Amino acid sequence: MRICLISDTHGLLRPQALDFLRGSDHILHAGDIVGADLLDQLAGLAPLTAVRGNNDYGDWAQTLPESVTLTLGGIVIHMLHDLKELAIDPVAQGVRVVVTGHTHKPACEERSGVLYVNPGAAGRRRFTLPVSVGELLVDDGRVDVRLVTLDVP
Image (cartoon, rainbow, N blue to C red; front, side, top):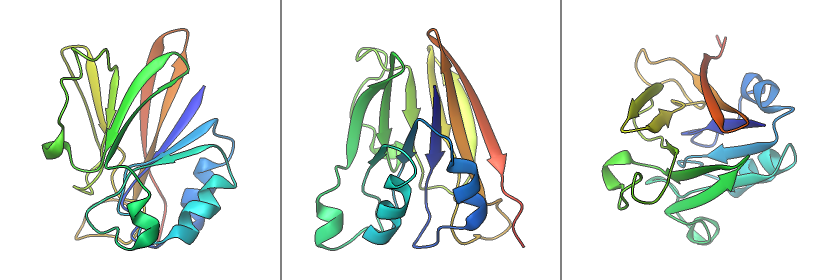
């Protein structure tokens, strides 16, 4: 199963990000979407789960949860925008992967058997940080993470 990760689009869905997301089995957006129309585009590619970020306002954003736990490919995933607001104990809850955004920095770290993955920001470039996305490749209980820097001008 290919689960694509995107975050911090801030209203900009780049063609390079769309190309990367095509063919995914599920898309997870870790917040700072800044527009319901962007979610509609993503939902047209694959089943979509999104959480609200600190820059998501308005009626459309109020329908999004601040965090969500779901099982995809037999793997329990917890997603929220800002890791500093993690309100659960992932190990105690049986979570294998925590997906976040907010920092705009792509990162992957394993702690106590839990993968903490931030795909970075796929929207407007911030400082010298890369424009990036990620994916979880799930196969028979195994999770491989790939973070990808998009080739953007």
